[in-house]
Length: 307
Image (cartoon, rainbow, N blue to C red; front, side, top):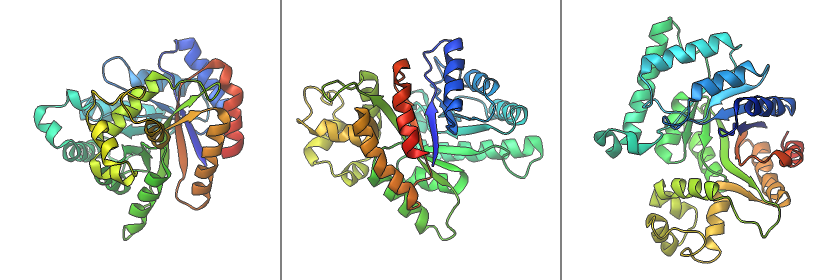
């Protein structure tokens, strides 16, 4: 199985380089680098990671076509692809909806698909190519975005740590007449806790909250959440894991969208993902690790299981 980790963006330059060297030395396949268009210069980090490694595939994970002009995005991708042995990959998603024009907010998927198609056309026409000369990943969870990923992308980066969503994505892929070669990767935050009494990182919980509050009711029902839980999820002011959420049910939400627990608990969960890989449902995984420098031995345990 192909395995990747995200780059901890709060690290200084020297520590980022050390992190990249460590990920590569453990023979992981991919490094994913986030972008929020305000505080992160994703392409500087991509270039740093590519310059600091020899075989690691480095992706934007993810950026948005709404953050850049399509011509500037094309130029940057062309430079990175040609200068780093084709180890660069472009991961795209809708991104931060609050910065979109008002008319885009009402139909974000429609405008995202339109922007991605325009980007591909711009790149091909600018460099006289018949296709993109770097791989494309689409970050998705809902049906329409997954189907679009199967249409245009090399990887569907599924924003979920749930077997339900992986099985659903596989059923969508299998239902397409000429089954696409698009790989399915599971992406989830990784928070390795010291013991079962330790608390989840507030950073991880806030990311999970953002995912589920933006999810459709249909998707939440597919996860088996009760009407009461869905009501709480959709009321973001009440959706607080340590007080208003029904006891025990916030934990089920965490299990669906992240890898949180002791290393023993995480390994137990990953056994199920390894089985999904062996049946052809899942080709890869990407982890948004809440980085702690004393946990590399635990990362090695995960590697031993998955690689």
